[in-house]
Image (cartoon, rainbow, N blue to C red):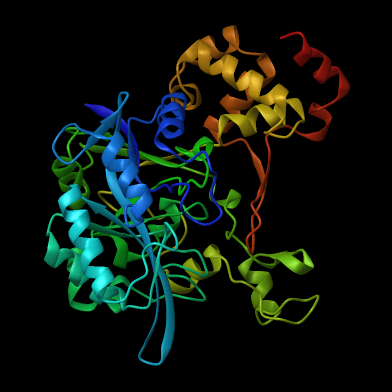
Length: 413
């Protein structure tokens, strides 16, 4: 069966997350977004684990269900450690096939001094390879995925925190790593430039810190809805069962370009090199973004598409499209009202952004918003790239297209 999965989210017990990140709100938003399968996030946190055990019922093998929405047990762990006299900070997603396995993981990590109760995304001072060994020894069906693999500060390839290859990080266990998560600041096309990643399946997830953000990046499968078949699909990079990923336009991500947020300096990699990777305003070292790091490690030109690659589609969240069409912030009541009206007509956001036919959109949605959705599908957008923790700024319509006359037209709908 075909279904949409977002395997990396958080709960209300992680730092800097919404208090609404509970099962009830996740289920509600999964239905609005068109997500069939969610990672639970944060299964190492004792309070969240209690909630998961009390509110999720067994569904297909290795999956759980609440009010029609499936869940797979997942968490993100931050490993901060020194290896060969160099410091590393890498985040990893862990998928587990059941609560018994989760209980054993918690027991094993706690026995090695990990404080798992301080944060939903715990910090471990442990070599990532050793953590991988512990988890896979507990249950070989567990699945480890380097999270947001290119972000500068906390990722396997991070310019300020990471390694130059999967093999350098995991050594002899690298053969057990089948996936990486592209993250909001990169897309598969950027990753295809590295021949060392040809064997790796590229997945995309929201890393949501509030329920309304789930599904902003996601994966579309056409396989059996079961833990084992999903994992097998990812391990084999099976194009018949893994159809495509849905991605941010990577420029919208917080670390796409180089920059220095305090000085409001944003530079392309070429511009940074001319300044010796130093901020032209204050002289401090720039935060080198994902494009810069990909260029450093790539052995292929832009535009190269390796054989067997999984396709992808770039999308912008519906609320942002509506906001740009109306010239308003996404949290404004007018944008939220329009969002709910569109969802009520077509069922869910995923279908609106990708599947609803053009003629249906133009007939049933304000023409300006419909035009915005169609432009996003066709890649006709302008984005000022994100940098050093600042999201990129998207413009679908030109300034002369957001005139008072256009605003009056919107008010008719």
